[in-house]
Length: 575
Ligand code: ATP
Image (cartoon, rainbow, N blue to C red; front, side, top):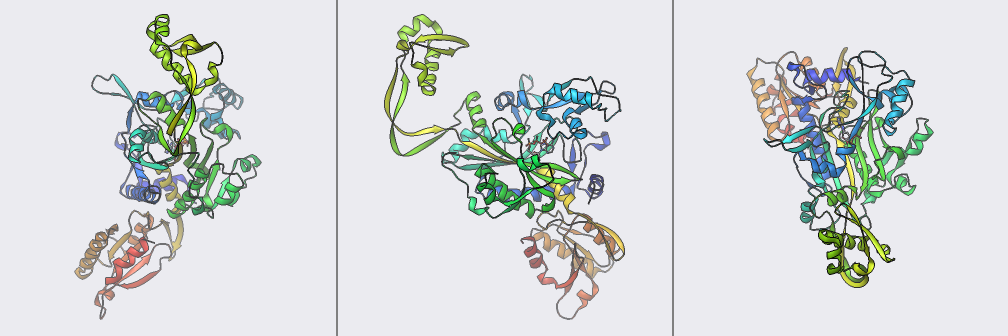
């Protein structure tokens, strides 16, 4: 198994990823994907797009990465998107207080504890600063907001933030998106884009960085009517680290199928179950090792207050389990919040099959009475009374009713409010859709694919390192070599083949430097599934020209007519 250092070293040497702005000392948590890494990431993203956008019939959008402050007031990020910070009094280095506690205790989610308790645990366990070794006891644990702030415009008078998740870019556009979907639920909107979090302690290469790519799907549903196509995933086998298994704490899992897990009530929400099912298959498709993969259920204290059913996809990396995607049933939280704070309609009008006659509580305040008594607030009080009648008709049972308007509390007699119940014919109603959100970290996925593909073996008595990447995601699909670099018949044909392979939409690299074994090794290290070698035997053979094709994992070689090469390679790539 590869350790993080081996992957990081290989990644730097072979152009997968490396610390950014290194010439200026670099900044922790910012990485550049090199040519191989950027191609691998793009392939993972297209596999994601294929599965979650195209095959699901969803729509993809691209929203800005900077958004104005009110968006994050509404979403709750301004107040609540915090991590626990403890600063070392000796060296000034900041640390994630909850992570320090988790490292030395068997507490799995210290973030759910109050700050003061985490500070006490730091003192009780005599935790020292990982940077300078001085004790951290006695230091306060504070909330640190992870959003990067910025000032919009030359005057700098409009505060903005770099989005900490791509999701808000979808939610705020809901009024446009629902029109596009012609008010018909369910519909799903996807986005692949950058998110920014000022992480206190970036670590483990791509796993915890400050700028990263997310691939998110917001599935909007009518909770009363819409059901997922559960049959499509009922037989998918999954390994669930359910809340019950976590409590047993014996390292066991629930090995089951999606269908059975729903039946047994282990996965409470069918939409979440559906996405776990298709995601299990998707991760396998892109080369995640299924023996190092599980779905972990959030424990009750760990869930966001609005999320009723929450699971993480986790992969095992360097001996630790790491969250690589989250699946949450978010109810109507997000759209209700934007409906409350934003100036638009975040509901969907749901047409009834037949118009319905319904009894509605209404108020029709006598403004001439409400006017003089309450002055300028009369219109706001009337609105507040209407809202209250719609929400809570029982509030009008007595002689008086109390409402808040314009920041004051007013008492109005129910007679003045003119409360009554009327029969009305309605053709439909406004509902706030619920949201199911699969949210993927692309960098963590890429890193998982790399680490799970990492292999060491021996070929002809020599050690080799290779990446057993799936053809669909391999950044360089074919290496093309003339056996020797000084024979024009070979170099010309190899150059021509590179062109043909690229023309067919497959990535190819030409290499004529060094002995053939070295060239194979270089391609093995970047996970290239096939190497094509043009040799004299093939060019001089009677009849058709042939080349050898070597398969990466087995190193087995076959001879193919050159005319069949592109078709064969394309067929394998397309599975
Ligand atoms: P963590 O607990 O590891 O900080 P999170 O629960 O805050 O993650 P979410 O807000 O659910 O993460 O974000 C969805 C996905 O985005 C995660 O599953 C992960 O793959 C990715 N992600 C989140 N934070 C980072 C980060 N700092 N660096 C890289 N990827 C990240």
